Amino acid sequence: MKAKYRFAIPASLIALFLALSIAAPTALAKYDSYHSALGQLRAARAYIEHPDSGQLHDQEKNAVAEIDAAIAEVKSVADDGKSLDNHPSIDSNARWIAKLNKAVEQLNKAHDNVAKEDDSSGARERAVDHIGKARKFVIQAIALEQ
Image (cartoon, rainbow, N blue to C red; front, top):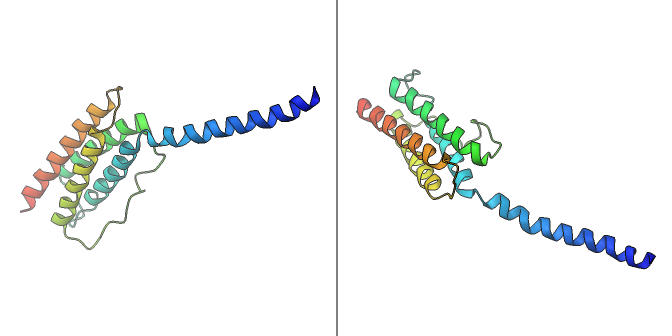
C-alpha cells in the first residue's frame, strides 16, 4: 500500500505542474492585443502631455482624457499592471507637430489592436470609441498648429 502512495503523490504533482504550464501561457496570451494597445496608448499619451509651449490646449487635454478613458476600459478586462509612465522613451527634442503625428500613429495601432480583440464585456467598443475621439482631438490640435 505504501508503494502505491509513494508514486501517486509525485505523479499527481507532475500532472498538476504540466496542466498549469500549459494553461498559464494560454491565459496570458488571451489578451495580447489589449496589452499591446495599452503600451501604445501610454506612448500616445506621453507624446501629447509635454507640448513645446509648456501648456496643453483644450484639444490636447481632451485627447489625454479620452486616452485615459480608453486605458481604463482596456484595463478593466486585461490589466497589464503597468503605470502610465511605463512607455517607450519619447524623443523630447522632436517638434510638437512631429510628437502629435507620432501620437496619431500610436492611437491608430492601439485602435487596430483593441478592435481585433475578442471581448464580450463591451469594453472593446467603448475603448475603440475613446481612441477614435482621442485621435480626432489630436488631429484638431495638428490643424491648429499648422
